[in-house]
Length: 110
Image (cartoon, rainbow, N blue to C red; front, side):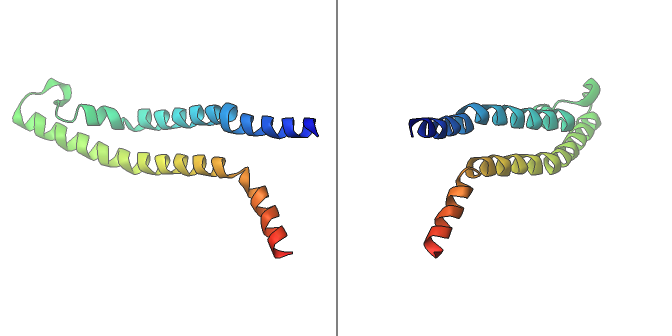
């Protein structure tokens, strides 16, 4: 019986500590890749800096317009990617409890 309890504890330790770090690292890599692709944070950082160092009024106006459009485009990509990653994390955290819940429902309905 000691071996079974040790295996159960090792599974929970592996699932919620070791493998969770791996999952979070990969999800952050995906979010950073999407951010790099859309240049979302870079456009947000330099929204009022003129493109190509064109310091005229028209250059600044065009720069703000293009960067705002790029931010809108980037947010249409970043927000669903972020929400999908958040949903995947929640599913990952809930997944080990589904068999326990299924057994509980079976016992209660019997």
